[in-house]
Image (tube, rainbow, N blue to C red; front, side, top):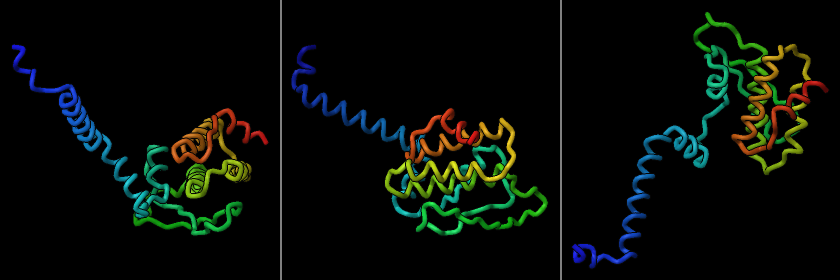
Length: 172
């Protein structure tokens, strides 16, 4: 029995095991993380066609019939980005709510900051300014918006915030 494995060196064995592990994990990653890989590929190739609507739909759990997208004003960080309504072909559904609109605005500001060098000191005042606009939200809606801000900042790597920190912005 000793003569079966004697011609194989440890180096050959470890190389074969490493190659087998790499192939296994490559297959797992390609099969299980295909949507994330496509987003990553689109982001690096510059073909990202994400206006934030899909993430908002996933966040709220329901589809909108009208889409608000930010106008292209990427030169001024402190400026409010105007939004325009793009009507959908299905006119029988409700227009976007104030929660939908502020969610889109917040996501647009965070996405814009993600394209810039890491500067949370510039991003945080913009987010605070959006939360100070005259609007009435319930406590549950405020908590959902705070969670959205923290999650989006974490996903894009623009700022490290906690929900308690963001909740304090509502009181100012």
